[in-house]
Image (cartoon, rainbow, N blue to C red; front, side, top):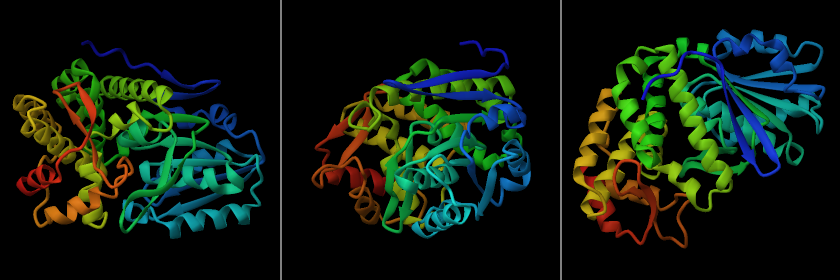
Length: 364
């Protein structure tokens, strides 16, 4: 599969009569006219974090000159995605005097996008928001599809709402300042799309791992656009996650449990998803649902991307299983997991014996 040339790209998310664009390309945060058009009302609240704001906040603020603009900077990290920080955003909107035509701007990674989107969903029962993702993981996953949430100590994303953005502007130039660890974490979500439904894309990601890790512009743009197209199609068919959209959670039930058990201070999200995908693949093989050889192919691909594939030491399998019971996909206390029949063939599995799940967790 050839990599297309480096040019700005666009993917539309279509939800019946509603539609919003995802724009992908370098230098988009410098396009003041494009940004200004995304906030038709008088009030704008820009939400960012202390890592991202020094690089990009000034130019985004400048795009909204002439409006009443406020910025709220949060500390970085998943551990900050709390109800208390959400409360700060509500207070910031009140101080701004934000009206029903206000626009919230999420400038940062997945934590900022989730928090800002949830604030937009709740302020006056719903106002506009725009995603300006600055991490690879946010560009290919969390900025698209309208899932917004905050965490509780008991688990990840347990308080939230579906609230679609008005637009997603993915400026690939921001990836130049992304730490290597965060780049690799984003690649876990990229290869996930291949693992769950596109074997050819899985092969492309594995073959192009060196280029992706070297931040090759064309390779990254192709990976982002392909990932967004996959997610946009799935979201269009199942916006509220009642069926097919659950497949996007491949590796996430295991991964979220690991994140929560580590107090959101151990593996970052993409790393936890990588481990979770391997656990889902191993469970599938042990239940004779998929060939074990595909698990080994997945492990090799994740290693090529510099990602972990084993449960971190010191985590109790029973504690992880208890976390998994709080997963939002579960019904009536019964686990629902995303397993696969092999690379590119994920499915929703019910009635899985918890003893088998615990065994996979214990073996790591």
